[in-house]
Amino acid sequence: MLSHDVITQIAAELAEADRTHGVIPRITARYPDATIEDSYAIQGVWRDAQIAAGRRLVGRKIGLTSKAMQQATGITEPDYGVMFDDTVHDSGAEIPVEYFSNVRIEVELAFVLKHPLEGPGCTLDDALAAIDYAVPALEVLNSHIELEGRTIVDTISDNAAYGAMVLGTERRRPDEIDLRWVPGLLYKNGEIEETGVAAGVLGHPATGVAWLANKFHQHGARLEEGEIILAGSFTRPMWVSRGDEVLCDYGPMGTITCRFV
Image (cartoon, rainbow, N blue to C red; front, top):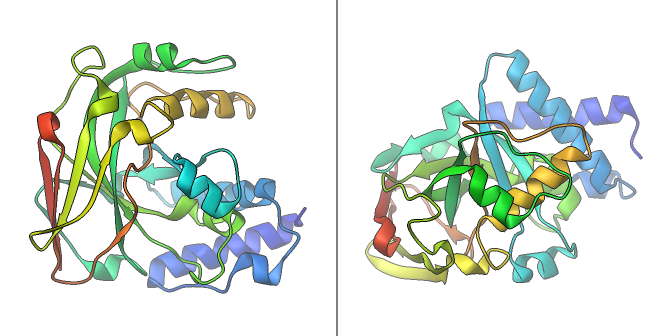
């Protein structure tokens, strides 16, 4: 376990990297004994400092929800981070690339809760009952830690690599559509790059919401009414650069567009 001083120091480094849109050396290269518990402690110190500085927390992101990504990182469960209001964009947004250290896009569904959700024993049915609506979303990944050789400890410490989110406009209640079969066709500059279907996220995209509620219970917390839960990607990350135009077609749930400037 890392000392409190080291955890605080790394959180401060990540905050500075966020401010300057830079990257820091890998945590696991400097502290090879750092654990997943350490990484969530670092993320928590960073999060609390951001809230103290006036940022408003609006939701949570869940990552590593596909078998392929879990196998690639060597862990057997998802991870999570926080989302602040100044990172949420509407479809059609022009997003400056200088906001980020590096930019990749993932295709996801987001859920907005109509009442609190807490564990233990929270099930998929419990999560669906707590969800007000689903909305398509693109996640913008951003790493403040050098990419080469990163581990799950590095990624969790860095707020699970969350950078921003672009929300669509089509909303569906869970009883209006079979969320497992929502498609994603991801285009860059008019050419299709990635495809997927939402069942790729733990068999059902809302499964992660139940997992997160149970995970939070271990820390004496719960998911709150009105929070946005970004449920995890059902495509591989797609790199984007300045000038790229992105479109994702979610079939019955409409499209999302954005442009990086």
